[in-house]
Length: 262
Image 1 (cartoon, one colour):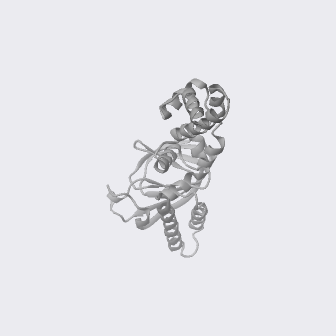
Image 2 (cartoon, helix red, strand yellow):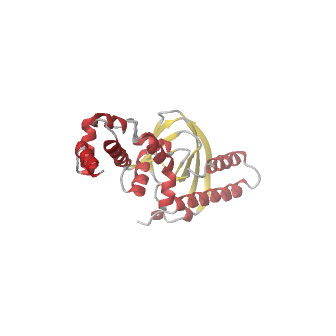
Image 3 (cartoon, rainbow, N blue to C red):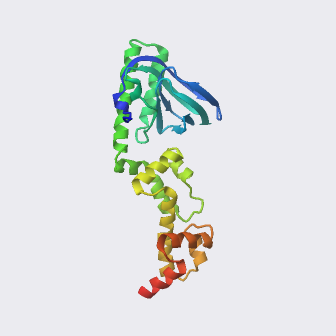
């Protein structure tokens, strides 16, 4: 199936534009009569389509084509704006798709402004709203064109990578925390991280901790237990297991080898 490109979206009619707030843990099941662009100014929602989950928050926008059956779960309270429209594109070209907008937060404000203008029914409101929606679509497309490059992907997770480098000694360093820091859902964050580093975040953290432990094993008189704690492992047993799987040596063997070579 051809990958859906939001820049090719053709809007034949705007059906409705509205903003609302749903309480946390609100759940719903529905089938869309029209295509929809779902934008959150605040809060977090999860849309499940088939077996796939899409996170919608201040950094993630969701497009759903007409006829989509979905389940909604509101995880955090906040304002959500929905633009419902008919698309002139062939049905088989339209697929559910999430878009990251972390570096263009003004998109959220623009969509909220469109909602207010639609509600007021000002002069030539339909034409103006259509024009503004196409402007938002262009900005989403531009944002995600850059995000599709490795440099763009790294920019999306840069803050969390630097956090790992500074806080690797914290044993409570987990993917959900890093994903939230990057303004993404956990699944999407893991996929971006893996694309950039060719390894998932959990393995990256393990490797980073092991690399730091090598310095301590060779250059200090700390025991294996002390080194394990200093680099963020919960206990020496797990540290030894991970260390050997990544280096082929036990920590003690590596320390002896390193000191001999030094």
